[in-house]
Amino acid sequence: MTAHAQETSIQELEREWLNKAIELATNSVANGGGPFGALIAKGTEIVALGNNRVTSNLDPTAHAEVTAIREACKELNTFSLEGCVLVTSCEPCPMCLSSALWARVDRIIFAADRDDAAVAGFDDRKFYDLFEKQDSADWPLAIERLELSNRTAPFDAWLAKSDRIDY
Image (cartoon, rainbow, N blue to C red; front, side):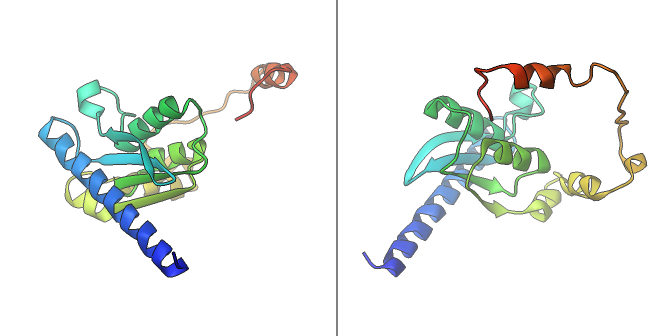
């Protein structure tokens, strides 16, 4: 197979995955979930699927991307999704983007963006804007650090643990 043909084949596969994520999102709406769907793929195989379960699970962290990441980690029996692609119906919010970074996925592919989501009433732009603000006085919640002498005790214990599993 030529390099061009292989690239075309990969692009076609990614479009199929993206259509699957959009289908998951649309079905999620029909089943009482939010309008978001995601999947994790490794190589040419889909490893796990996820849809938005915020209202059905009463869990504000149960976004489609997070549920797909959780399922993929279970399926692959690992906390690292290196070598995997996160495919999602919409641009990941800051929480989902952070989750993907922690999971170490190689790539993220999405269809709709934050502006499309805002039209539907999901204004994640507020969160993106919030993280860009340097002055914490502009934040909608207080974040404070209290000085304690034992503040590094958990890290000290971690560093002293010879059988720790770094992540």
